Length: 200
Image 1 (cartoon, helix red, strand yellow):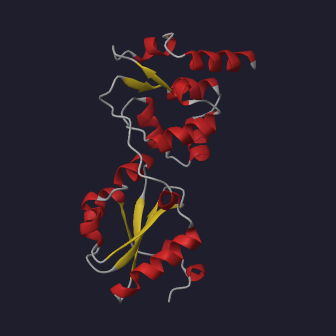
Image 2: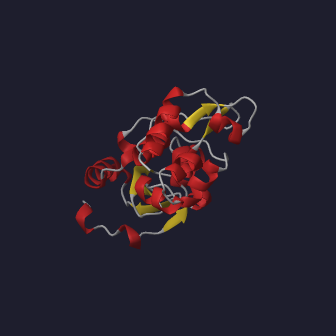
Image 3: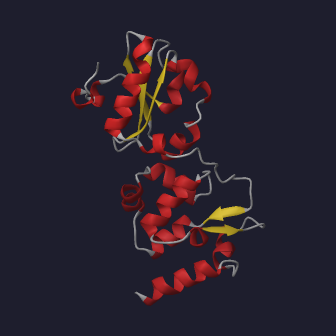
């Protein structure tokens, strides 16, 4: 039986999330590790390459940016469940303890005002990345309206920016981000901006 305290994840073989098709086809425990080295998810499979063709956590992990999949070969498939359970107990990965969350569809007329709120908080994109555990590259995509943030991502942003979802999201049917920021659609956002400006 594997002792989790003796396991050095940095020594395990791994592939970037986008190259998940290169995962082995042998029994493994796999670890989804973000760009900060935090284990976000642990799973098991007798064929990881096949398992990751349509993994239910792919979209959430892809949003984080810089995620890699490390894997640990297990000789006996019968041991996979017990080893997986022990490793989840030890590493306590976030996504193993949270429900699968739907994302905000980029085609919807709902825009995220991340850059505006971040700048009002006097935070650099790197500071926000450290506070949320999300990569600067992914945050940049959100600021350019190129990403589809899950509710979990929005929750992280709200905590780091000390704001509410209504401060970050706005209905914008004309797809004009600059005008949307000043649109009186969100009273919650207006109160937030007034509070921020009053503290300056």
